[in-house]
Image (cartoon, rainbow, N blue to C red; front, side):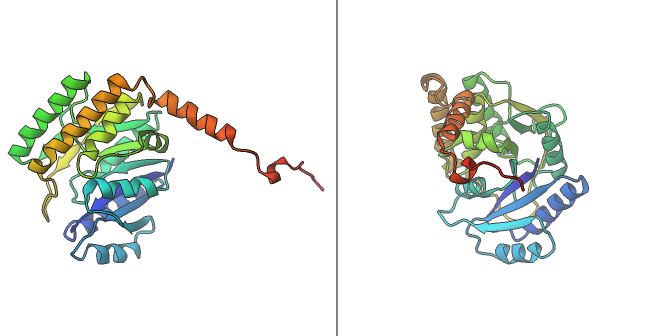
Length: 269
């Protein structure tokens, strides 16, 4: 199973090089077939030049420039439309996510799960230098999600997650242009009946650059996604659930006429 790693970056000249290098060296050391796909989200610094230089030494690296509007969600969505692997992880470009945790996610997915979610707040998980105000808001927001959807998973807003290709296809179309995509993907997965495992992970605060998350701007956007997924859960009559999308996909394949070449008899000389 080939692993794709999507990394959105915006003005990450101080972090992108060590982030990509560490991810590559870790996956290479563990023998995991992979690609690293960095989405340059309208960076104004030397981020793109650094990516060009990294491509000369890291064979599994490629990058794309976000052709649309600026935003974390927009950038990730470009990656989710262009990755080539059998599964895809979303990781941050500021070294906050551990590549060793990514290896754990990948191995857990090999057990047959559709998704693997990280939790920084379960046994074995931890945060390092997490800003106090953000921590309090995070815990309140995730508690609201847990109560609203009746789930035990306690870190839905954690961006670090792994999805199979078929799962990503079943979650489309994506709605979120910003960081609320981190909530949309797991909630849709849960509401639509995809299987998931939760694995503890470590989060470390960035050492360079500035966080792109603006809490005041994101509150209403998170609420919109929460409300959308809640409406889908109770009123969509299961139209978007996994078994429905899988059945639709099989029906579409069966409706495709065989090509003239495939209809010819095989002749062996």
